[in-house]
Length: 296
Image 1 (cartoon, one colour):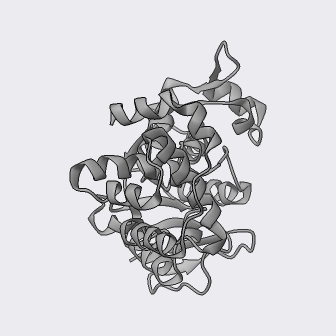
Image 2 (cartoon, helix red, strand yellow):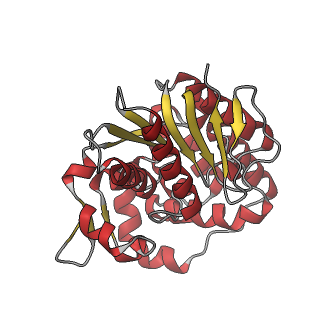
């Protein structure tokens, strides 16, 4: 791997001037099938340019100049598995911010307040951010819960798990360091309570909050193997849009099974239409797409 990277660096001037050829219809089809088989992600014709650009960038680093050779490389045993992981980091990291889609967090806050009003917590609240990317959503969830619990006798009785397929995104999530633009939708007092401003102007999540959040790698196609059960809150936003309709329903069915009775599932608005589950009741709020699992 390192020798390939070295070759790409030494030749960077030449490579930058030599655009890779357009991907043929057959090559595009091969990559489409590989991506969907391994991750469930569907790349339609409109995303062909995105795929070509992402592959070209990585191929230049490795000194590979045709899509067929690179395809063979990423499908070649153990070496291919390592390169596949690197490529996934390029293809799946999505742009996100703290408290993206505010109504979803308002639903969460009211849900938690209602639970606390009806009973005290006997065990820690468990929250799960599916497709957590670089960590903005799980930390936003942690802040929202910390705020709701701040006036109670058990302000730290919760934990948030973020899962994603991208190892580099998870590494950035664990670092918990963000540029000011990522925090634009947050109230200033929340920024001051939960972040430390660094000398370079970026913001770092404070240890007390970071200790309540853990991040782990998970391919959503492997939800059946995921060691989650009895989860109180699941957020799955801006992820399902990349999958076929039948797979979206399959993913939601798996997530519903992981919820505790009375648990809350929040999905991105418009990401799935007509999904129904015998154990799930829709939340009556047109601003969000959310469901509560029936109590036994």
